[in-house]
Image 1 (cartoon, rainbow over the protein chains, first blue to last red):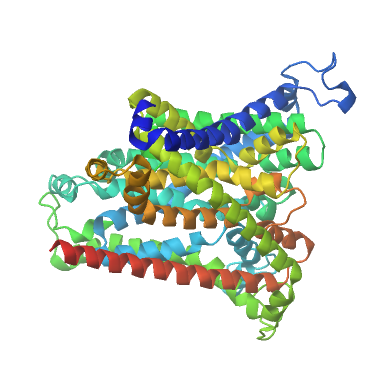
Image 2 (cartoon, rainbow over the protein chains, first blue to last red):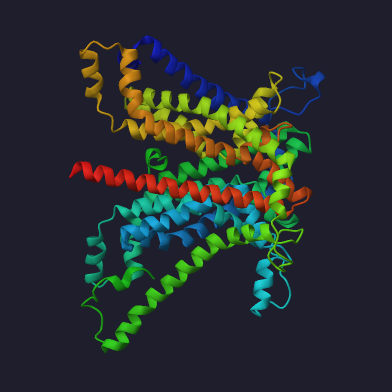
Length: 293
Length: 290
């Protein structure tokens, strides 16, 4: 702290500390602590708050574990988010490699520009575009029936629609970290491996992917977190059978009227995402500084 | 699947006739370009369909069947008072977010530089944690905290909830620029008799200015496009993203597509302007260094 006052004088240094304190204490820590507090208390009538019934317990969390439909939806959200992450990785990796290693600088910057455009448009509009494309009497069905691939229209809304819309929404969060990390790989290493007779898949498995692991971990962590916390894609592209955990949380707050249970569910989602982040970073031996860039 | 062709054939490969080996070498290349084509169709087809549907007379936005070409939906969009109110709400929120996130993020980046390793990494982890938190959780946490003191969802909570993670973006952008700052400039100014406040205003702030402008732009975009966090703290307010999402439930017409097309056009113009500015800047710095 003395370094801060020494550099900026007590007035400015004090102002900076107040701003940072307001942010971290008021906007980050306090809300999350209050959410934990909410999650551990029962949902009571206003008269009973602070009374003998108002005790801490794990009841709200136990409810999630015991409610078969909610538990099912939670588990499905976890593995479906993992699936979205893997699918996004598969879609992005070849292009990231090409951009970073093979493409000429001008081609690469043109492609990057083309990639950025869909992602300056907000997630709701991007998902709306899929909603229109996948409609029962919509363009995709018409196109596939014209080609003779389909005899009658398919219902795309549901698991498939949610997957397509989510992969679409999170491509850039996967592509750019991987691109950045492959870019720093020496081309000579790949050529050397090839000259020594390594097959293409082996070069990727043994040289490119290990080199790019920080970028891959970053992309996967972000994609998983965004997918698990997504609300628009399941709400617009889903079907009753493809409900997402965030939709259950929303219902506790705005339809079920039990904020305590909603807070408990949100806490579970938060813990899940933080656990995935920390475990992935530990496994790939990546530091947090490399993630947030 | 990728760059196999750009490299000379390896000596370990079995000898083939030139024609056959050339054909074999072309297969990965062809497969790769099919993949690139599919990738960009996947990327742009939804946007093209959504934009084109703004010109179809069909009441439900689609391009199949094409019932006739019209620009009526644009007129309807312009006449839609609810849309303008939603845009106004988003603009006010964005202004509030920029007013909080830019000073807070800048202060955070400056505080970080004056800390030592251990405290720095703890504080840094705390600062970037909102970026790794799902947006819905940020909204919920803000909502339950403020209910305790009787404040419900509305403009204030939207601004505070959004600022909690947008400040982190600002911090990262300012910190990146600060890394290239030459501290001896500050010492020189102090040596020439400037006060610390003056050094900050006349030396450090002008140096940070490009990063601050870029951060303000990014904060505005992030704020306007936010949905997940806003959904939980909006109270009775309807910002633009909420308005669009509600339309899907209450009666979607191509007027929303007209709005989408306008936003896409602004986006493309912005992206091109950004790219041109970047290239001019690169050319200028290349010219000055040679």
